[in-house]
Structure formats: C-alpha cells, structure tokens
Length: 242
Image 1 (tube, helix red, strand yellow):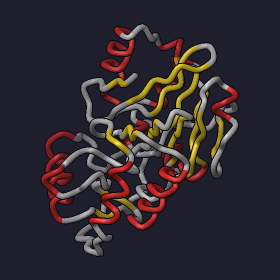
Image 2 (spheres, helix red, strand yellow):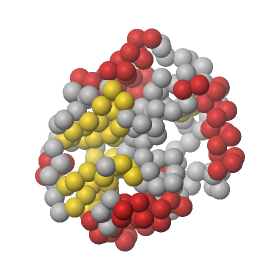
Image 3 (tube, one colour):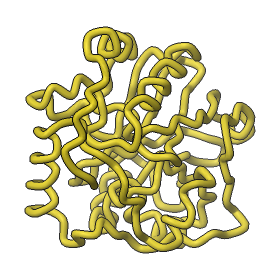
Image 4 (tube, one colour):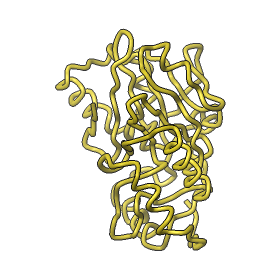
C-alpha cells in the first residue's frame, strides 16, 4: 500500500513476516502525518519491522532515524549510503536532466525546503542493519516478501530497487512520473549518471519488471521505460550541479 503523507515522496508498505516492510520515508517534517495516515490503513509504528531506503537523500530518509528509534525496525540500505546517512548530508554531485528540471527544482527548494543544504537527521549504524553490497535474492524471501533487491545506481551510487515476483518494481528515484512539461519521460529530474539509469531500466526489464512504482508520481507500465530509451537518446546537457 502507498503512503503519501502530505509530502512529495511515496512510501510503500509491503506485508512481511510479523508486520510490514516500509520502503522509504519522507522529509523529517512528514513523520507525524505518516504515522496518522499509516494508522488509518491499520498499520501502527510497531508493525513496521523493516525499513528499506532506496537511497540516502533527505526526501527518502528524512524521518528514518526517528522511525527506526521508535519502531525498533531493521534498516536495509546499500553500503554506499554511508557516510552520507551517518552525517545527515547528501552527496552533492548530481546533475539536472535539462534546464527545465534545473529551474523547477531551484524554485521548489527555494519555496519549500527549510534546509538549503538538503540535510536530514543522521541515521546511525546499528547491529540490526542489513547492508546491501550488490544484488540480494535471498533476504526479502527470508522475511516473507517474494522478491529481490537489485543494485540500480544512476540517480545516486547507493540506489537500490525492490523487484517482486509479480513484476512490481519499487525503484526510488531511478524513474519518476512527474514534470511532464520538462520532457522527462520517466527519467529522474537529477542524476549522477543517466547512462547508469538506463542500464538500471534494462536490468529491471530483463528481470521481469511489469509495473514501476516510483517515489515521485503514479505507478506506470515498465514497457514505457524501454520506449523512452528508444525515443530519447541521452542528453549531454548538464547545466548545473545539485
């Protein structure tokens, strides 16, 4: 089930052994709204047994530290997410897709983000963590989720995706459904490496992805990713940094 608690990020709750696996959080300020909305869906904080972060950015890990502390959940994260999570600061080398996405994000950050450094409460390592170093086809099955974790860098170096046996893919910011006016065509508005983004799309398709559940926007058919790669060669324009 999807929880979009007053913010811009979709969080996803998947049933697992003894409770739920939560994929991503929102910003730090979204925590109370998340608790209220998930509660209306019958999921309490104690029901969240695992938290998987698709990557370390503040709109995905903003209230992770508080949720982990109050729920006792196990954190699932790529090894390259540290030291960024432990410092509460993002890697700062992403480039915008084009000038339109640069302008859109600049306006959004100016109007709606209190922390212009994109910082968030630090997430400390603990003994309950599951560190992902590559693809992992076993861990999710061990907690009652029929699926696998795939390493899908591109948006960030630490990006991971969850691909379920039924073809549903939870991809973080590897793909999006937003800013159609900017010609995004499901491409992330910012990324470290768009070539790696396309490789991640190919991997998901090759592993049987049927429906994409992005962190921003509505779900869409995975086949549209392959169409984008055919119709939109990579744009070398990168007018600014993150």
